[in-house]
Length: 488
Image (cartoon, rainbow, N blue to C red):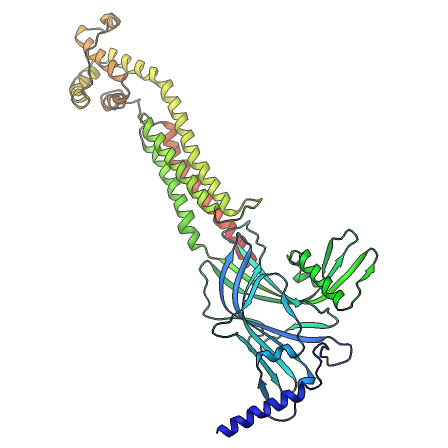
């Protein structure tokens, strides 16, 4: 058995020595003279670790595989394929593949370099590696958090033009896709709806004013591609071309830098709403509902109503600041901004509503006193009823001080017997903490009945505020969820 292993290893060494004897790694392989070398690419995504709105990028872990045919590496004896030490990769031709829109990418090296290199008998090379890639993803947050995002990945050669290297997707027979995703992959805030694959050419021209113009031949892959070819990357390409002795051709005031083959893979994400509903929308709804408690507090209790309104505003401001801290500063309103602003408006308007009610109270103070005074002057039954209740008020409040007012103001009363009671009543009406109770007692007495402790404005606010807020929520969720369904 040991002898067979030695023989096998010996055969592999002989094969490699033979195919590399006159091999020139600077000459690219080709099926036909003048035709580009075809690089077949497929990706298997293992996990998505991060999608950042602030940095406009996403990170994923994958197996990245490249296949190309180099007939100079073919052999006609021994095994059908040989697994080669990764160090040998430096001795053969490579397409110098890179990710045009990546911010960072690295090969996993624990416990050893996660790379795989294999040569088939017909000269087909398989180069596989395990990568973690962080790529740019320009995001449209107008519908946030009911949004869909399309994050692209651009694959091209850092060195070769479309006439030298052509990239194609290597689609699997079973799935008919070149970008496959692990079925057990889960993300905390997003769902992966699927992937899209495009093949295109990218033409870069340096204009007379030294700016760079990007042309994408396949319009379906054009979205957001221009920003991924930065000045620094283009300068590196120019230097590399000049080092290779390639002259840059100038035409009509511009230099044609590159016409590159490019693969575009797009990941489609749908944001999950559960987190945002629990952490943002539900607290906002509750704060708005709490602010409406003021409509049920007696209109004379100014301190309670103002305190409730101020607390509601401070809570809402805190929620707004907390939400915006995790989002980029964009120049447009997002769906979340609209909801927060409307909730804030409902809370502020509830305080303004009480300001209107308070003005109404001041205007009605004199009118209430005159109404009760006139009522007691004409209605002896009302005076008798009030006498029975006066002791109860005095017992609860203990605030009835001796009244040192001249009784000459009571000349309009019909009897002296009721004068003291009337004086006490008017004195109580002037005390803010007793006015509501006195008027409540008189309301329940005979024939008064016109005075109400509930402001008419408060009464209608209890009805219209919930109706308006409910209608807003129905329209809001129907509109933005419908947009998401259309885009999906």
